[in-house]
Image (cartoon, rainbow, N blue to C red; front, side, top):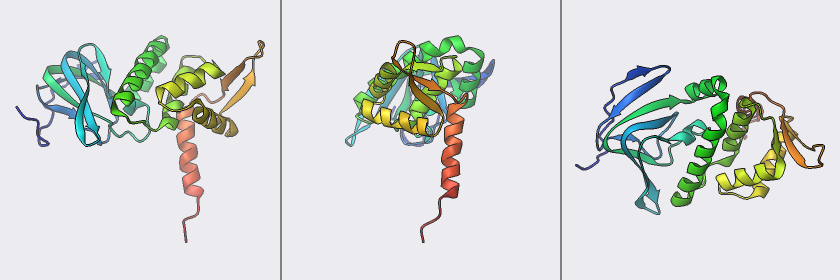
Length: 227
């Protein structure tokens, strides 16, 4: 059965606490590359293929089986554009997790943040390497720092944090360092040395992501139009 652009996901939504369980029929497309995304999904039954366009050709990045999370970069990158297509390879069940649901869940269950970060970072590395695409790093960095704050970790080792973020977003430590310095210049964090004379990042803003987004909006609103 060929997959056509007209096919849509047939959903049967079932209440599961604050989340919704959806049935996705075989061959149906859950979301498409290039479309707007505002949620991640957890695969609980079935098989989901993740694919995308690389140099004009369709390429399969992964075939997911339960339990897997996918579409997760919509939770981290402010532009929210899907970088891949998700297609059911057999009848499947998924749980939809919106940004608001995810943030609320992390606030109520901070102990899971570390394991979630590990999963997302590893997936980001693998997918971007296979796709040969590098997502916008800046807001992704902010979202990850925000998760550390929610977990009570406001002080981070400088060198290891830069390296981890650079590896995750397939960029250089110099570029990450430059953006971290920009956040410091905005008064959102500090770069200092601890008692062991090791450099650390101290995050000052409790809700870093929202503050950065608001600052961007304020900057755009105050910029004069070209004449």
